View 1 (cartoon, rainbow, N blue to C red):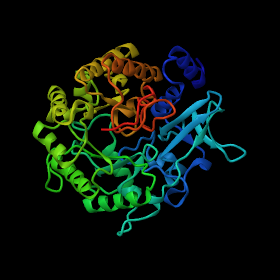
View 2 (cartoon, rainbow, N blue to C red):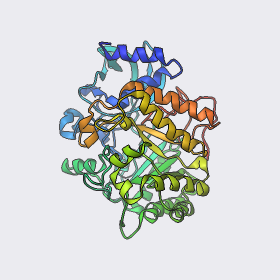
View 3 (cartoon, rainbow, N blue to C red):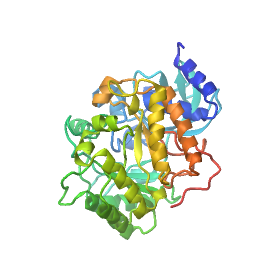
View 4 (cartoon, one colour):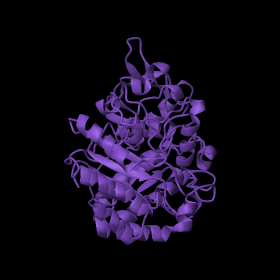
Length: 440
């Protein structure tokens, strides 16, 4: 199979129940995309919404290695439509890789397209600059820095703590570049606020609410690095929770409130609920016990895999199982040197985890692993996991949901190919489209 096109077409033929759009989307997420200079944004001064680097780099290179794309940011996301595969509207998070076989470029008429092996395979749409990005806070900070939006404007992503207290080789998750991403932005002289002031967050949300007249923004996520001691005098539940409390008091019912945090003890989880959080994401990262211990050494040391899973189940008693949505990083199961060596083994393990949680009514979701070059697993696995793994995972995910009679989780927008806006994996693109819009 000599070309990337041949590989993609073979997988579409072998797995016809997986939407063709998801096959391309997963390949772009796992391997990245290159951009011609003509396809880059003019940062915050242009007409295209630029990439905000909202928590991780999600790039296959450091900023100095990205060339012009480090000076003129690429779009936050792209939309694929049409082309020879007649793709339905597909929203894809941008992960820059200058050596990718995929390239976004303009044709002779100035129309953007996605090219694979030199052939145009789809039209490309880019997100327009939202009106709220054109306004600054009173102190001059940009809305994009304080409260960027992703998923085509659906989700406000509030990374209120830009670093992680799991620090160094013996504690950091081996696929995560949150701490490096902080360092590279500071080194480049970019604004990248470490701990966001709650009043600044509220001011940014006021601007979004004022100018998002169509109410495209529907949810917010509070997140950041793990807190093992305290930040600003607060433990993890109180630190992230006090933002939710302030938001819900200022904007009652305006957005679906979500928090990504560690799997915390029951009393801490209850605090999240009391503060007004509606959806809890206690991410379990990878299912296999050995890989969790190796790849998440800080989480294993401070909490432990079994206790992590117990806390996830306990949290369902507080939030309701449907509103507990733990993430895993799809693909690290196959990362060398410790991961599974066959797709069959990796899918079997991951499906075991899906069945464990779904049998309790909890629906995990996943982010497609991007092998960022400053992480141990990224350095050892620059190609990421095989595309076949990602396609078979989509098949296994939907099949397991059907086995347990579950539907797509709330807070992610509409499911189905052509409808989904969740941009960092294709799980929503691969679910049935005949469900009503999500509600908590």
